[in-house]
Image 1 (cartoon, rainbow, N blue to C red):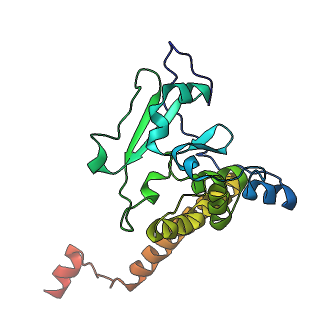
Image 2 (cartoon, one colour):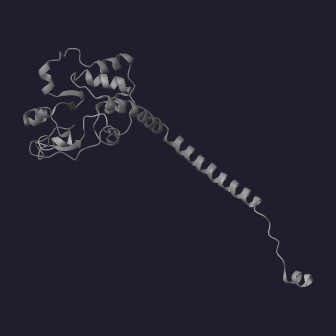
Image 3 (cartoon, rainbow, N blue to C red):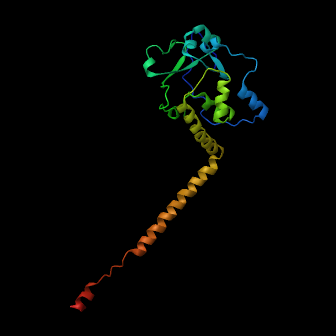
Length: 222
């Protein structure tokens, strides 16, 4: 996130981490990423504050977004407001002239569909961790929990995050070999066209021959 100016509204909401990235990280460095800062001791009152999950990306409660001084001190420019639709009256953008907001109505229950929000939206921190650090869904969840200990996703959300990992890995595989996949697609289309031609020839062979008679043949028969 770029620093915000007190009198200038930032650029429209960007789509962060929508393209899979590849990072070469050692096992020791990866463990350090997952475990988080070792010198931070969690205190109960920290539930009311926001914590940095990824560089310049913070996660916190709604109360943390109500303090203009805090937001400006963290150089926040864009805010994702995730709420239940029933909370719309009280949980809403507080400083729309200072920051860009994205508001998502999400119910905290196991029936809520989260995957539909992933492709191009900034919502689930484990999803961002898939992209940014190439983590498994379990390691990504642990990475977030080790920075904000009070989070507790419901069972439905955890299941969807696990399912999304397979979708993400498929996207990574496609992005790694775009030309090869394109060539395979052309080859599949060519095989399909050839199969259609073969089927047409077979149908022609099965079709009965129709004998035609000329006017002279009709005259000879009479």
